[in-house]
Length: 384
Image (cartoon, rainbow, N blue to C red; front, side):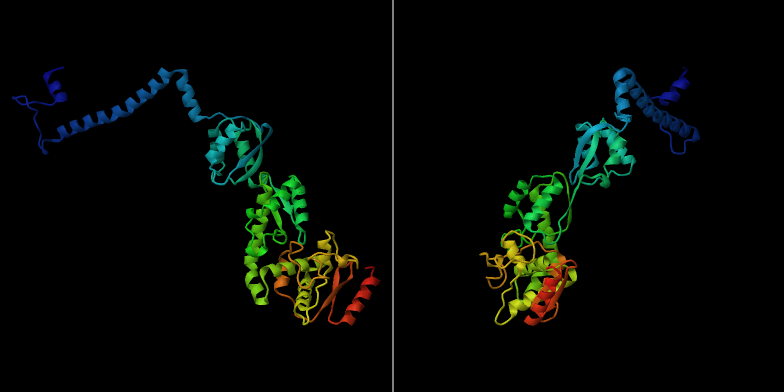
């Protein structure tokens, strides 16, 4: 290399050994030279990165290959799997949380495979809490396909209007497969439920009849709590407290009336009239006894609305043939139609009603005792 080339690379010096500086107007040649130096420096960084990466792979050998392979293609099973695994997605869990649980249970080969599969399906944020039935050693895509709402494991239970608490507990046990004794024990733990104060610490009348869906791990206490919560929602929607006050009664008394209406009515359209009969008897001067057969049957733990003469003599506070006024509590769990009828009774002066045709459930009403006797005769003619 000659002196000129060396000076070109290192920069020219003056006679005293100091590097010469060019002014801004020193010419284009120097400017091009500086740009070339910068370009050389810009090329070195990516070149070094490539050399380092090659060194990692080459130096690490087989282990470096495995690391890169796992990072790009995670372990995954193939096929639909076998056996049975119940997986519960809890409220608030992310797709990553679920993926780790699936790997722990042996459903998928790796959490990364599942998160990739669920992301590819566009459902990372749509996993819903609940219990699901999956299999062991499934492909991640197959597992993701089963974690949908239609595949939830739920016990669907319909509690009919007018069931007593004992019947409600038996229905829950039958439909969920849990022991009846667990429901009976749970019903006694009143403090576990958000009962309204006027319920007087009793569940009868306040486990609302409706259709419920329960997960396999839902406890009897949680089921009953959900039914009480549903009652509270219905009471708020109907303004039970305000309506009771307007009628001159407590909410508890309205629920007692509604439970009797529910037990006595054969048809929904007759409910407001039956409610009116109850109010007319309570408000009559002098007050009449209610004499409702349904309350007697409740006292005897029997069913029906036609008590015998002997049954009407039973000694119980629920026997409205011997005690004035309303019984101490509801005799069924009334539905919304019966509660609505108790809050909005029909207008009329009826004091009696008779289901004159037991087969059709038609109920007829009377304002005088003579009319009442005629209805009883019709009832007997129809096989009552």
